[in-house]
Amino acid sequence: MVAEQYLKSVFKGKRVFVTGHTGFKGAWLLQILNWLGANVKGYSLEPEKSNDLYNQISGDSLCYSSVIADICDKQKLTTELVRFEPDFVFHLAAQALVKRGYEMPSYTFMVNAQGTAHVLDAIHSLKTPCIGVMITTDKVYDNPERGIPFNEDDKLGGYDPYSASKAAAEIVIDSYRRSFFNPAFYIQHHKSIAAARAGNVIGGGDFSDNRIIPDIVRSISFGESVGLRNPFSVRPWQHVLEPLGAYLLLAAKLTEDPLRYATAYNFGPNPEDMLTVEELTKIFFNAYGSGSHKNLELENMPHEAKLLLLDSTKALVELGWKSKMNAQTAIEMTAKWYADKHNNAHNKCMEQIKAYFL
Ligand SMILES: NC(=O)c1ccc[n+]([C@@H]2O[C@H](COP(=O)([O-])OP(=O)(O)OC[C@H]3O[C@@H](n4cnc5c(N)ncnc54)[C@H](O)[C@@H]3O)[C@@H](O)[C@H]2O)c1
Image 1 (spheres, rainbow, N blue to C red):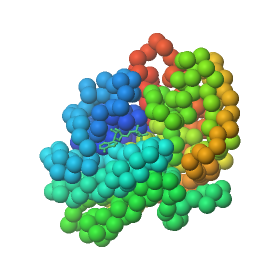
Image 2: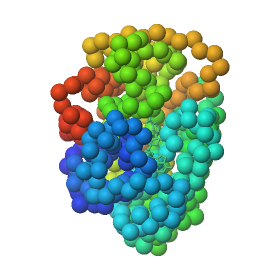
Image 3: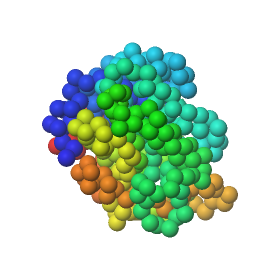
Image 4: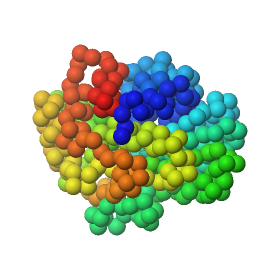
């Protein structure tokens, strides 16, 4: 159950520290937490572009406080987190792009693996109880591309630097959980840390480079055909509200039982509900009302995993979580967000948030 009343009973009046609040998922999470009545302190770099969702929703006005700083600055991060004494930490800050991971590999490892260690160090310095949900990705699994859904016990790994840096973050999280936040000694530290693995998300307000929906929206606005790099790649498309609802549910469950749920969970869509990049593009155009595409045949493309499936049985059995919408609905909701030229970005997000958590 991820319903409004349940989440309000958990988060209303609570202090929530969110790293990565200026990013795409962070901006949606900020709006949900604000609506639930939580006090959010964000810690991130500046939004990269003036039209980023965070700027469009006037994100600063939804925060109790917004700190623009680097998670690589361990002292600053620790000071800001410890001073706030958060009840919850959602760690989303990351170098989150596969392509940039190839361009800046050591930086990607520093932000994603070392940065996660900094967040955990800061939580370790806290004298007050705290629940931490660490956000990684479905790309943390060693992926031989056999089309078999990964479960949480599968081998971690990563071909490209982004995936490997997130797998490294998982190892960091597991080490800190055993060494400093061990459920067996909860009574001494009062910290409860979980990891959440979800896949590619789509949703309104994403203007990042090298992501399919923003590429589609940009091409429509320029009156051009969108070029598809990997038209036949199958991806588990998920609306951004699905993993965010899952992260909130996981944090809520940790308040009920801080020992049992302090582990890693997959939050993927139904494995039967897969679409290719080309199918997604066609559904988007249909719901948006216009658009055209061409399939690109590019040579020397850096390796990108073609098939990624998550087995989310553990989340279903232990947390009662399952995805609420299929890929088609997620794509249509996203297209409608961009097609709506009357409402402002925050109103459009809030309309979809309220409908989702009903
Ligand atoms: N968007 C997806 O499809 C997807 C899929 C799986 C996992 N994830 C994970 O979800 C999280 C959020 O992703 P997103 O799509 O919102 O990414 P995003 O790129 O839109 O946002 C990244 C956020 O991290 C912050 N950040 C980056 N480097 C930082 C640094 N050195 N110090 C402080 N803050 C820093 C940015 O300022 C921004 O707020 C990431 O951990 C990402 O790996 C995203």
